[in-house]
Length: 404
Image (cartoon, one colour):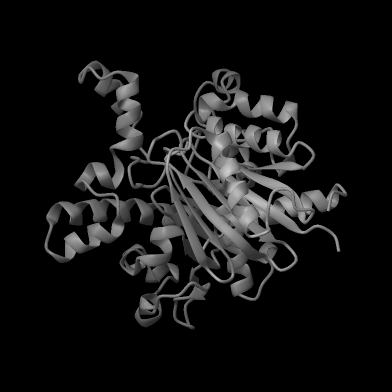
């Protein structure tokens, strides 16, 4: 029997998330996370499936090398170790692939060099992703390591969508353009939505709304992205948990010249203390809804601003696509907060959009339609599965290259 297991690694600046999947049936064998790497209070949580038993350990984990070794030890306890002959590849989430990487790629020195070159446009993400890659390659140099890029799905955008209206020579010199993010999620959800409708992806136009602490929208025509809300960085677009989303660029000049703020201070403001958090002091939509129910006007205004921006993108992408077959809500907020879905669609009946209140209130982990049967445009809730998407792309590439 050929090897069929793929280990998916998502390496953050101080965390390492992982999942081990068997691609014969896309089942999960183990999942876990190492948190607070580099601190005395590091923690590893490991769950073996399908039984669901969870083990936790607390104590200092010095760096990502130590974190991955700890993960390997946990997997060894369940006879799922990194040295297993069943392990065919390790798939790595890499946030920024620029225009160079348009599909999953087997990692070599040249790939690492290019990911390093993209650090200036993804300073919070690519360095952490590289750390995970180097650590895994050192532990299993014989095993194919595959990079799956958040930006790859969006490389099908036409230049009219991807280009900013600035001096083209400067834009080209510094690679300033809209790249988009959450691509693995948008790819997975758009295909799952087509399946839910009983159609092929190439026959469906979908607006995908990935609403989590980070949030993005995409317009997908026939399985290909034609526009997306995030841009050069994940800061552009929708109102997010702590990010501002769309902003007049002159706000930055104003804060520097009039407010006396440094570029680093403005960067921190827009990325870490803006969005819902900046508007009302909370970035958890469940807490914001609780405050609204208690009559908190600050929370209500934050919610209204969030929904206003979301509705603007629904309308804009409806115009971009011309025909919309479905709108799909996904990620933490999109999947689990019915009032967000209700408010986003309310009043758009003339566009063929409507919700069934009872269906919208249902809690489920399964893809489902929440629009009336008679609605011209289907409204769907589709739980995203970025890890499965990374594993599937990694496995397909290794089989294609003859490693599986």
